[in-house]
Amino acid sequence: MAEKKVKKRNWAFVLYPESAPEDWKERLQKSGLLCAISPLHDKDVNPTGELKKA
Image 1 (cartoon, rainbow, N blue to C red):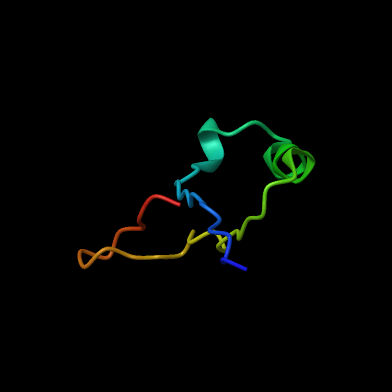
Image 2: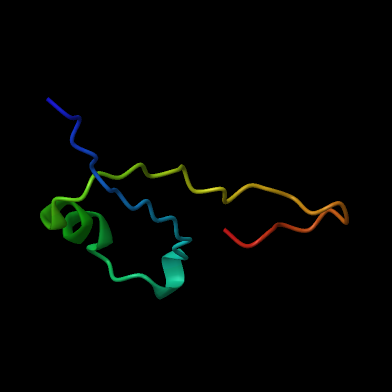
């Protein structure tokens, strides 16, 4: 029997806390999509010493 090829699409996006709805995690869970959420990088520093955008 021939193997069945399954096409998939992968997406990546950046979400900024100030522009996201409060319940963005719940909405994502309800969508049923598989996802991975990176931790918020809110303590990263530029070479100049100022904080980077979270």
